[in-house]
Image 1 (cartoon, helix red, strand yellow):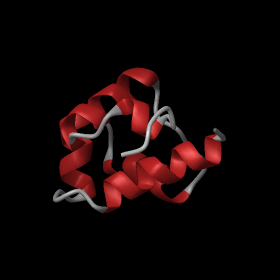
Image 2 (cartoon, helix red, strand yellow):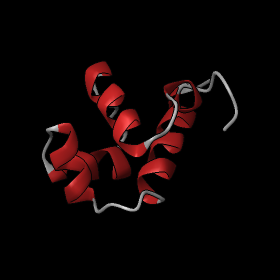
Image 3 (cartoon, rainbow, N blue to C red):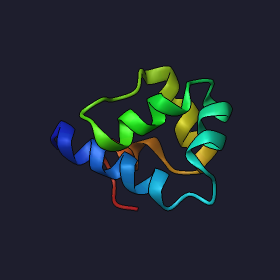
Image 4 (cartoon, rainbow, N blue to C red):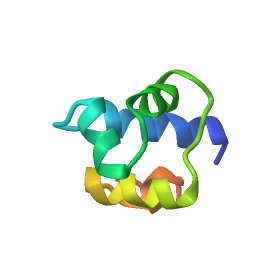
Length: 70
């Protein structure tokens, strides 16, 4: 598993979420610009933020981390 694949999975989950990037940002207590950076740059969230993202997006963290298939 590479960091690039983990980032792509996170982007995919954000892209397919029924929420705007702003709504996601508010839910996980980061700025909308930070969510945009996760989408467009090689930026990865801190572990606590990743956990919040997974919970809010209803996606398993082990999927994001490449430990299982969705």
